[in-house]
Image (tube, rainbow, N blue to C red; front, top):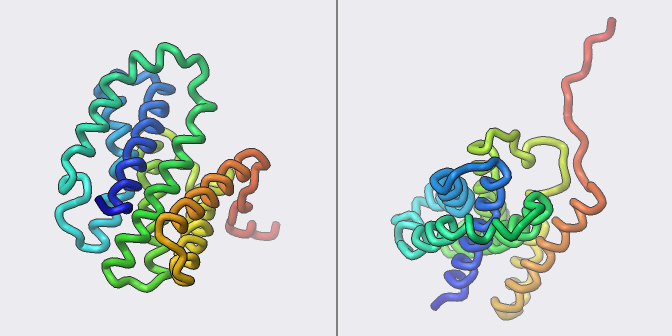
Length: 207
């Protein structure tokens, strides 16, 4: 099995767990939990595949992925009974899923012949837009689009680290581990110290 497929499978699991926790915070039933988990796990990768004209979509071509997400959602009620504080648990699976999906997105984009900058952008989309869809379904303003701890920037930076290591012929597995570590560490640090960009607003007319 290609290491990209292994990473992609791990990304699906991590993102689905994030979706389950996000839906549970809203008090959804199992249908809602599965819907949010499905959107978070597959939203970004679906956009990537559409942009790259890859068919079938990655989760259709790997039908065990939806089955995995369904299983996670089905047993989420049992698992969540033992979790008292849900919100603090969202960050780690969110960061890990973003990192894993980002690197698979870059890998597939490079295989499709895109240039490195486009590949990194597609990696960022793959890693972050599932979370955007999850926020929208849960009736929350996506944190990606407002001043909040850095998110897409972490994926962007880690993506360039990953590509840079591949360019100097570091083994793919090593480059992947380092890239994931950079993205997750950057994201956790951004949340801990509240690193964010300022809001851009239209200048007010002088009175």
